[in-house]
Amino acid sequence: MKVCLFRPDMPGNFGNIIRTISCFGINEIDVIRPTGFVLDQKEVKRSMMDYGVDFRINCFDNFEEYRSANDEARIILLTTKADKLYSEYSFKQGDILLFGSESGGVSEDVVKLCDDSLKIKMAEGKRSLNLAVSVGIVVSYASLVVNR
Image (tube, rainbow, N blue to C red; front, side, top):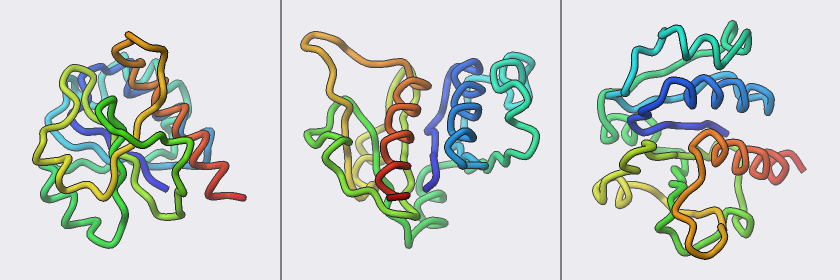
């Protein structure tokens, strides 16, 4: 399983995501540029603590390039606009979990290139969860499913 962030905006979230997914055995992250920060920024390093030592960050200039480099994998978008729940999904080894930017999610063009879209169920009237929290919730669950 891999995690891909589409144009992340916040360095603190980025570092926390690296820290979180490394605790589930994921030692690399894919990033679609542009980002709202410099990847080696002090805040990124502080929030990931020492979890970034053996961690690889793979950068791509656009989603089309990323899709083409991962044409064999299922790319699963996590979005508040999906109908299906992540907790009812059959995750598989090799799946890529795609999360949109904090400020804008992903474009409709990106949605069309994904294999599936899932959401996290939230209380009525709530808009969205923090990106790092969303990644933690879904990666934790997907790891349990894949490693059964």
